[in-house]
Image (cartoon, rainbow over all chains, first blue to last red; front, side):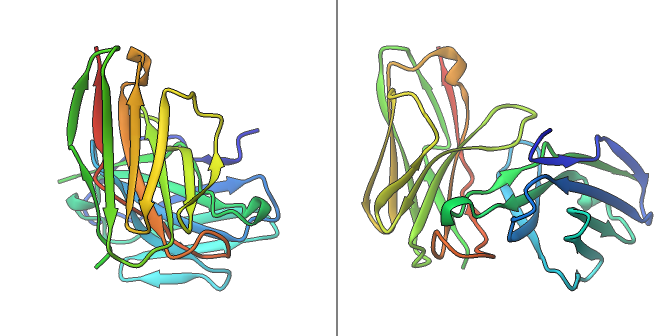
Length: 112
Length: 115
């Protein structure tokens, strides 16, 4: 089983749609969780950290369910500029080290 | 300003060449990282430096040699690479190494082609 698993893509949605990405992680001791977005041939950029209480940043909402080892990202009112690959990232803090484990990514394509 | 810079942006090198990749951050971060990313794959960790000391080497071949001259700079020295080493090499930094919730910030990467 992979350490971080994500929905297979691609997701093709019209502008204005709501889209949800899911992610599961295998290490129950994992401490921190993130969503990064990566545009084609660019570096990953931090989208948001994910907290146990859930958090929202504009059109983006992230949720964490520690009991189910499940992370989600909801994007409301999709824009063309949201087209990118979304990477679910977990820090298992193994041995105290800040080592990020990346999911394979889910590609989102928003069309007019 | 969450900026990590990397040079060069692109590099083409032969299998007998020696070259270096450079990374710089001025955010006062004390942990720096090298990742390798192949096309359509997620980044894979290569090395972690914490307070200028190497703390993680993910069993990377010795043809890759990292160096951290000071807390703002990170180099990756390349020697006798193979064509399969062609990839995007990403540098990242975070405030510290240990502890939860320390986001990592990535530089734009160096796209390396080994011929």
